[in-house]
Length: 184
Image 1: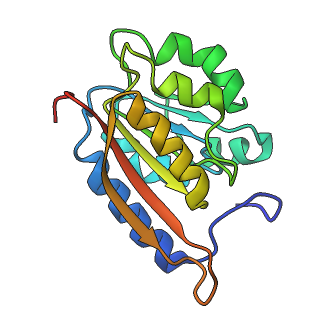
Image 2 (image 1 turned 135 degrees about the horizontal axis):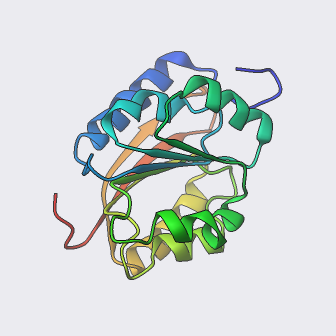
């Protein structure tokens, strides 16, 4: 970690969230790669890295991505210092829309939520992934993104709430979206 990058400060709640992500990852096709979009220092990828043959980590903050590279070591990892829009216009087209697709995508966007380009890419008819684990810090942007993901053929199948900041109105959430008709 580095003081110059964001990291969840409530370790007890973070442990609960990671435990739930591990349960979600157990439902994914682990023979397919995983993507950790808005990966920060690689916290989620670190705990999920042994479950997937490859993990692509995407983060626009180069300092955070350098830390993710240290935290999530391995030959089968791709590190992309890109915005979400640059990701979907470049590397994502080569790695996520092929025959293979992703077994799981973890998305932990900033408060403004997923960009329009990212929402469009996730909803691509060819099936980018069967499972999206969406970590959100803003109920309004999660609602907006949920509307677009469900319109693109995903179902919101689970929603967990995490009180990272007690005695405030701030709430974190973990929403699981499953592509309708996808094998479980």
